[in-house]
Length: 113
Image 1 (tube, rainbow, N blue to C red):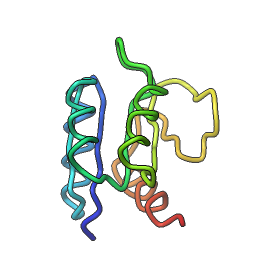
Image 2 (tube, rainbow, N blue to C red; image 1 turned 180 degrees about the vertical axis):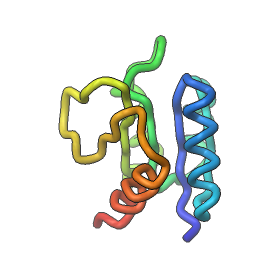
Image 3 (tube, one colour; image 1 turned 45 degrees about the vertical axis):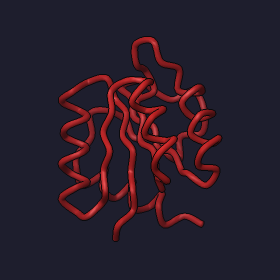
Image 4 (cartoon, one colour; image 1 turned 135 degrees about the vertical axis):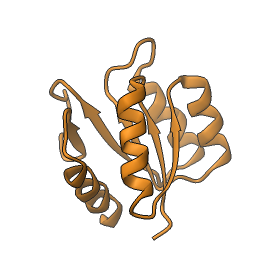
């Protein structure tokens, strides 16, 4: 399993926790906390999954999604947040979450056709 995952969150503790949890089970992780690093990452790496916080200061997730799709049309998305999502919640994980639930959700999304 060498799927590549990009994680963007503006909370350092959450970002670090997700990174460590997914590295431990064999994923290749890139963790970023701002738009500039996100744009650089999607322009240079073909990610299989992007995990993003729904609510980050000064960043619209719709912008992130659009930019990522320009570079990686096949990329899948998972959103995380302390509040309920406004759209389809199939790929949503509410904060706080247990690490095993995160890992299961990531695997489930990556296994989708």
